[in-house]
Image 1 (cartoon, one colour):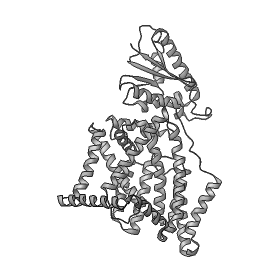
Image 2 (image 1 turned 60 degrees about the vertical axis):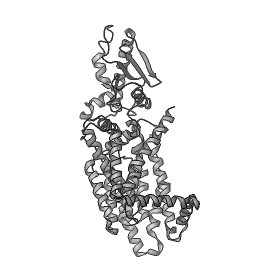
Image 3 (image 1 turned 45 degrees about the vertical axis):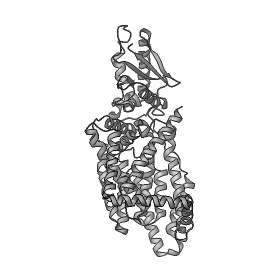
Image 4 (image 1 turned 90 degrees about the vertical axis):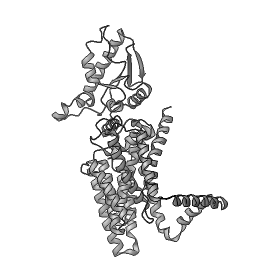
Length: 494
């Protein structure tokens, strides 16, 4: 059942990502207590992301990028930290004995009850009572952002962003040691590492991990605003708007750069107030990742959102300075969020699909069922990124032009051991209707002419079906998959 396989992939991808980018940094990059928990998490994420990008690119260039080399690298990093902080046997023995003593005390005093007591003390303590409203609002906002960002990936394997196919191609190039230094670097390197460690196909990693990064992008904007203006409510407002009312993703050009720019600003803002050196180190890592991302300028909607958040932050600080008794610094962001939510409730981003859902799933099925490089696909160009390095690929337009006059010859055979031809019985509609005005450069682009234009795609699919039917009349064939929209022919040389 597809949903069971998807659930298994979700678990593997998210667990591996949590171990590599949350648990491992928390053990390797230990800090003195007192720093904000969000900043500690983002700092560890930035450091580990930079190390992972460097490792993935270098290992791919050396043709040894795989789970074994990545695990060995992370293990060496962990052991190096342990050796640095435990340089003699006495320290190791004392640490071990302290753990044994703690275990005995925990067992004798029913230590399993303590976490519950600590949590209730923290929540109900007078010192943190003023944090309860902002904590509650933050949790509600994060749930809303997660719902908006995760809805499409949890329901569809195909990608809602066109840039996702280019990112997927870069992941497969890294995994197959091809073009390791080509852009983009950051996101494909991170996803390639997770794909290797989790032993999950890159399509599933592309499906489930970037939406979590989109949630972190919204959270990063909120952390930056809160750190700069020292107002948690402004941060919650920025997270709410970035996560629920902007459609850009880390998959788009400049998306990852925007994320690390916001984190860098958050680290510098906190350093200004607390002079913690860890913030400087994390800012250096964030800006290094920003440089590697080669970001484009902020999208208009992101720029407007951040400007509004900055304006709100200035107003809130002035209000708290001039009228502290009214707590307008908390009231203004809360009222704005409530008004925006009532006036325009959050909706799911509008998808911009390029293919049928079954086309993506059948591509993944072929890649997982047949031996690598013993099959070929003739299909639209979305299947090129989905199968790169796993099998051979023929552009459907070139395939039709090359073979349409030869398929009726009984002696002719396709030059592939096993060939799958994707033919749409109802051509996929990228546009609701043919645009009336199209620039000459777009009109002459082969991708637009053959796959985006409704008329061009319809004529190509009709020619492809006619070719396959004529070939099947004189050669052995079978239907690998068929539904009301898509038909996949399978031709073998045997």
